[in-house]
Length: 249
Ligand SMILES: Nc1nc2c(ncn2[C@@H]2O[C@H](COP(=O)(O)OP(=O)(O)O)[C@@H](O)[C@H]2O)c(=O)[nH]1
Ligand SMILES: [Mg+2]
Image 1 (cartoon, rainbow, N blue to C red):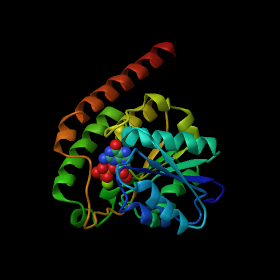
Image 2: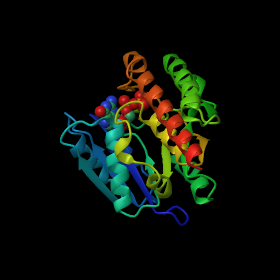
Image 3: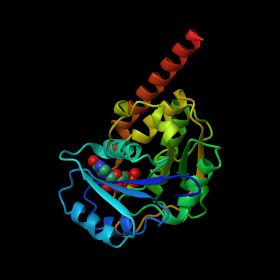
Image 4: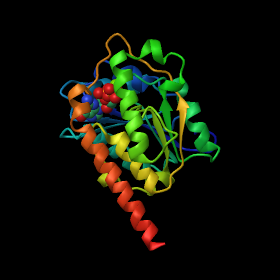
């Protein structure tokens, strides 16, 4: 529990055998449920998640997709399970160890205070961003964040690609989980849908972590295609939904 909130941490993992042990073992003790979603990995991510689970006092559940569904698909599976378990908040922490567990209370505080329904990390609010984040990432991220401000409608939000987030169950209930884009582009699409639902979003500083073995499934090809199409679609869907609402009211 964090204050009076029951917390689930969702860990999407695809071929993360090396990093998943620590990612699971270091989830803070106040977290009620850890849900690892093994997205049809080819390595022994599932077994290694079990090793991490034994190092952690507290509940860890490993759910395996028999087919790869993408990071968004894995997170959606975790959100559903968190709702089934009656969690008040579902946090996303990647399986690759790029999120600092010490940032978790800062992410949860606005939800516990009742000032937000969705809180996301913003590495650009952290002083280490310019030294820790690779230059290519900074450029790509600034471009996508600027575009997402327009497409999502949240003008105060930045670092749209940061996967470290916490969502309240009332915000999860306000969107159609089935319709979310399942792959990269998922956080951008989610923001647009949250805007339609009138969800309050805030950014909090989180530490950028790019270790020696850092790798990513996102590369220039993803940024050129399909991400721009996902952004355009989310933008169009949001504007259409909001126009419909204005006509009805
Ligand atoms: N690349 C990739 N990652 C996935 C997939 N499904 C789940 N994930 C997990 O999603 C998280 C974020 O992926 P990553 O490639 O590190 O993205 P980045 O950190 O935003 O560059 C990691 O924990 C992955 O293990 C998938 O289909 N592809
Ligand atoms: Mg990563």
